[in-house]
Amino acid sequence: MSKKLLMGLSMMLALSGVVTAADFEAMLKNAQGGDPEAQFGVATSYRSGKDVAQDNNEAINWFSKSAEQGHTMSQFELAKMYEKGLGIPENDRLAEKFYADAAEAGFGQAQYNLALMYEQGKVVPSNQADIANLMLSAAEQGLVDAQVRVGEYLVTGVAFEQNLEEATNWFLRAAEQGNLRAQFELGSIYVDPSFLGQDLDKAFMWFSRAAEQGYVAAQARLGEMYLNGIGTAIDGLKALEWSEKAASAGDLVAQRNLGILYFNGRYVERSYETAVQWYLKSAVQGDAIAQKNIGSMYHLGQGVEQDDTQAFGWLRKSAIQQYGLAQLNIAYAYRYGQGTPKNSIKAYQWYSIAETAGQSGASFNLQKLAANMAPGDVAKGIALAKECLASAFQFCD
Image (cartoon, rainbow, N blue to C red; front, top):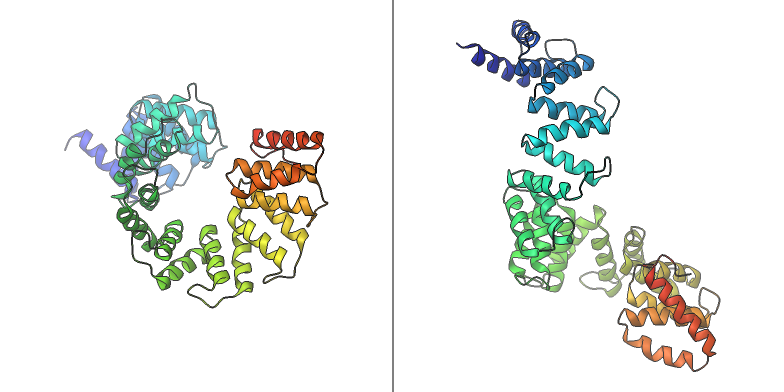
C-alpha cells in the first residue's frame, strides 16, 4: 500500500475519531516530516482529544504549519478557531485571513463564513461587492445556506438588483433540499401580488411543507391562508389550529391574528379579555397592527379598564411604525385631548402624516381643523409633519 494511501487512511481515522495510538504516531511522524495532510490530521486529533491528550495549542501549531503550506482545510479550521475563540482568544483579523486563503482556493464553506463575517461587521471588506461575490460562489457550489442568503439579497435588493424571479430560483434550489427558511421564502414570494409569477397554490404548498416541519412563521401564514381562503378553501378550524401553534411559539403575526379572531368572535366565542391578551403579546414584540388594536381597546374599555393614557401610548408606538390608522387616531387624540394634552398643531401634523399614508379621512379633518387655526400654526403643523417624514419617524415629537 502506498504511503499516500496510508496517509489518507490515517486522516480518515483521525477525523472519524477511531485513531489508534499507532495510527497517531505514524501520522505524527509524517507531520514532522512536513506533510501538510498529516499535519492537518495531527491538528484534528489534538483538537478533539481522541487517542491523544486534547491540546488546543498543539492543534493551532499543526493547523498553522499545514495552512502555511496552502492546505485549504487547515486554513478553514484555523479560521474557525480564531473566529469562535475555540481554545484561543478570538481574533477576527486572523479569522478573516485564513478564511480568505481557503475562500481563494474555492472552498465554499469558507466563502460563506467570510461573507457572514463581513455582513456582521466583524471585519470590513476592501470592497462591498466581495460579500455578494463570496456568497454567490458558495451558493453555486451547492451550499444551501448560501443559496438562501443569495435569494434574500435578490428579494431585498441588497448586494444585487432586486429580482424576485431569480430569487425564486435560488430559494427553490435550497427548498428542494429541505431548507425550511427557503420553503417559507418561496411561499412569501408566490403569495405576493407584486410578483408577476404569483401562484397562490404554490404559496400554499410551500407554506404547508415548512409549517408541517415546525417552521413557526410558515404556520402563521398558513393560518392566514385558511382564514381568508387564499390558495385553499376557507377552513376556520385549521386557521385556528395553525394560528394557535404559531402564536404559542411566539409568532407576533399569529398572536395578532388570534386577537382579531377573539375580538370578532370568529370561529371562537367572542372574548375581549382573550383578545387583549393576544394583542398584548404581539404588541410588545412590535407589531404595529396589534399596537393600534390594543390602543383602541384601551380607549373604548374593551377587555381592559378604560385608559386613554395607555391608549395614546400604544397608538403612538403604532403610528411611528407608519401604520396609517394609528396616525389618524393619534391626530384625533391630539385634537380632542384624549390621553395627551390638547394640541391643534400636533393634530395637524399627524393628520398630514396620515394623509400621506393614504388615509381617506385625513384630508377632510385637515380642512376642518385648519378653519379654526391661525395660519402660522398650520405652517408649524406642516413643518412638523415634514420633519417627521424626512427623519423616517425618528423625530416626530
